[in-house]
Length: 373
Image (cartoon, rainbow, N blue to C red; front, side):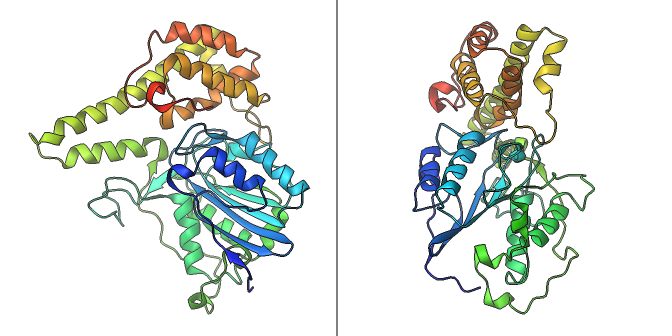
């Protein structure tokens, strides 16, 4: 399919904020977070939106700057733009831990938005191309270079003829590869949401084509290699800090600094976990607290009934206990469950003050990072 009026607009770095993302979606000059391609097909727009982030939390998209982008805000903008006739159809690729919670119970099936996510609403996504794996990143990189889901769909797009491969065919291949061929020895459940009738369309409608692949025939079997190893996205930052520490020589000037960084990030994790657990016990008792915090709602239900309550809960916690930061976003479901149990943010503010007698001053503190909601 030949596309006229091709225009690519990319936001990256600190410009990729919640405000800029919603502005781009909410105006006629649509743009996109991460890598995107946008074509004008008068008078409508066909739009591909992809975002790749490490360790993104339940119910929101983590941005380089605060505040984060919550699922209700994103879907509400999409509904408004569909009602205004701004786009013809829109496709999302969303890589995040618990990324299904962005759309679960929220994204309608009648606004011409088709979304696939790296995981369902209650599991982590997985990083790969990490140090020590094959293929491994260049030696100067101490981090995982990608994630199973995003690498799977991008490498599939590089390999196949996009004029003949459909969104549904790619979804099935990506789902298979991301799940270690449905064994789940590592990996996650790739999901699809929204207007599933769009998945019969060819990928070329959204990505264009590579003429070099025009002769490639689609094969149902997964011809791309299996991943040799993967790392839970929640631990991807530990890979970086550990590699940085490990590679420095004993007695070198940076060794102690790297050790301090590693211990700080581990201490932050313990602080957040213990604080949330204690708040749950103070609110619901030591026996019921863990049950309430870890409860998972039925498929098809949104994470929370009152999104304003959820955002207020996050602000209350961070005001007393410090920033959740990337790792702490795993507890977003706990705050949602507290809201669903009818607890008011004011009550959480009081018990958080009891649970956290001071705000840590490490680099992950809300003193330095700001507030997530």
